[in-house]
Image 1 (cartoon, one colour):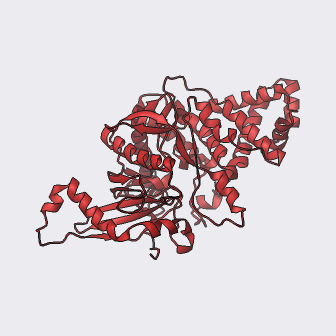
Image 2 (spheres, one colour):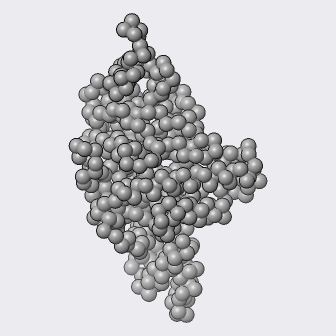
Length: 475
């Protein structure tokens, strides 16, 4: 079947965080799924499903009338294809299909992830006021009526929060009002997930009544293997790769599991950066609670937040691979669009943007603006939860350290950012002798190599720890 052009980004119903391509040459990963799916059966299946759950839909047609539904252009992301379906009365649904939805690729971990995503959305709709797509049907098998595993759900209305956040057609005062509305509504939604807290981290396991009965292993995108595959001239596959891990019984175990599973690199400096990152993660304070893990949105970023033109939250989409995570990166976590300045490899802000010069890529906020909005979001979390928002403040740092652990492309720049922030704080706390020693090896290269070679003195490591704690206390 020929690939279809996408809807506008602001209209996308249920997409993965990294979507945005729909050119045929960019969708090689979906060729097998597109060959397997029973395209001609999708509309009929949707009509049958709607008639079963909504009797009034069937009643409005006479026996001589034929009910119809139309398949709209397919939308492709990196990990999923979305088939929008429009009924004759204007109601729209979407069928979400995994890129790995083939018999060879769709194993037990992928089946569990699909089931967990569907049942989590149902759980959230039942127990909170958070607007998420309504799941009408799902099937984790590869031999079902449509030929591939799927989730059938309601179309999520609204525009991308990015379009409203960077609306250049309105005055600054109105823009700030709309931004505040987005932050206030997202905070109010995320606080409600606090009821889904657990002693272990990983993917939720559901009982017959639709409640979470246990926490099991979780599936994650294997960024490292996908990067390594790019260097393999004999492998041109674009199929996403995953690994399974957990469950985890301490936040530290969760933070470190990716790094613990990595093989040593031939380059000692790469190993030194990894060791430094492991050190930073080991210094993250423990959450003193019996339930240190909580269900959270897996990617709380612009494209998964749909809002009205005034910034009112309409829907939170893309719950793919939803898991219980440490509270420091959990439901009170800062949205990732507010932490951009702590991911230097991806942050593209420049002064021209402040003057309204159109960027080649995406608009960005200045560090000062991001800091102001972080304080604002923390205040909304505190107000909605009745707490102090301590996890929100801490998440700025832990979130980016966890990003660095999971993605080698951004790892060096994030670790360097932390070193650049920590060293001046450590120097202020140091005694004269240690201050001199640290000043002589304050560069990220010197510290990383000192760690991997075993030449970095324990007193300097301790001083860096104190600098790290001082950084966290500024949150």
